[in-house]
Length: 145
Image (tube, rainbow, N blue to C red):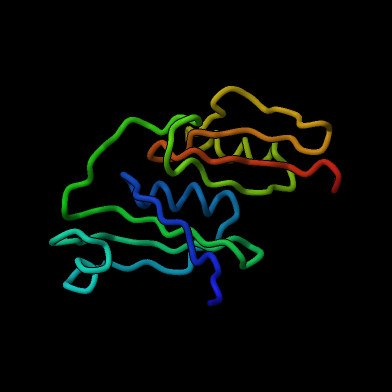
């Protein structure tokens, strides 16, 4: 059986704000839709499932994010994920210029959890608290500079 990663789905509080953040970082918005009905109730496992969705793609065409904002059932707010919690951890992106990426993130009110680390002069990387509390890892490959 062949298998490939299709996308990473992330529930967000404000779909427009999340789209703006990821598009500003360099992803492309492929489309938006509103989904509901028996098929989505069955697939997702929630009765009355109704949400606005957006699909975004990385510039290389290999990575996709599906963002969704629930209309019904009502979204359940949780505490933002911490890096050491079990479960969905983070979404990571390679960037050419981590300082430029951090400037973009800051324009959206998204700041590093602590700072930028340097891993053996191979990578500079940081975790940013993105929209809806999403942890976004930004990594710059120093060997390509």
